[in-house]
Image (cartoon, rainbow, N blue to C red; front, top):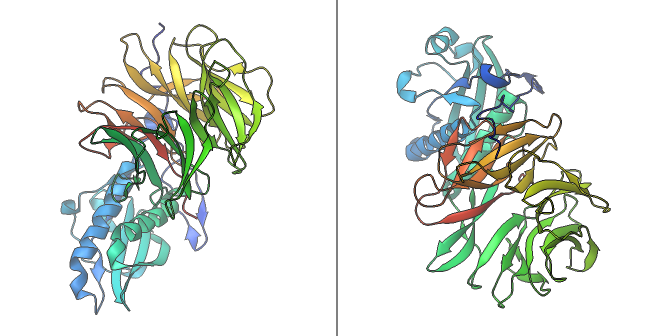
Length: 434
């Protein structure tokens, strides 16, 4: 097998943009070896009059925001022990030379207020070198859901410094072993909160979010056949969508919410099919002696990437939703699988087996056909999925001995385990919060 490149040039490019209230500071329009995370200081939240009893909440909010920003790989969050915050909240009261001296290029300050049983955070963001304040916003939430409030703050900070939407309020689904069974869990993108969403069925596998984030598709053996189900995340109701003989697996809802791509083996071989949202058969997309599986929609809904062994070993292909002859995408390596389209439409993440029989995560740039390696020498890494802003990946790993879930930037330079204990697999990243 030909060896993949260890690390191709970086794929992350943060765009210059403007924010309504002022010009946004620039995290960077930098690619490749020159990219360096943007140094940022996030101070402890001040307590407004009447919020003196919320010190623990303020500390927790700051901690979550720091962790969120650090996970992206776009920021280097300064250790709060490395600076002393004695200045004010607004531009005229911030001593910017002091922040330059501690190495901060960006600065985030906030004040916590307690109003009528709710918490309100007055958020301020600064670009230190130009001594400018470009972010001023108040975000509110309830004391019993501090995590949601913190993630919203992180989204605001991320948007200000990068000009792009953050993914901190989004959800991740995965499969976890529970007392000999496998169940689907849904948690925050940092692995916290949430919990088990499936009941019964013994084996519940391969979850994927509907585009509106209100439901999950998954395959379950609850009736002794791998059937496709849809679970409402609101009321927990369950609907069986496809129970054809054999496999009904890898269900993915189209970006417009109108169709489902999945693998069926009802005709004796695994092929890619399209169903309507009620489970009715629309079209068979592939016809090959090889196994065709793992469909992934392009963000415009015009194409579906999938895995096929029609060339003798698993490779990535793409086919239009109208059918036709599939186009082969990968020629390097002899075992490529589980493709995932970037929401930007520019990349495919996938799993490949290298010459040492280890599985790792790679990213194919569809514009240049260049392949970048995300993981190496960190156990087996499989089943990648993109964050909805296209800037991060989630995948499973065995690097700690048991199978866990990792969130990573596209370069692989910042990888964070978001689960511990037990066995986890098949992660899927949900859409933006609407």
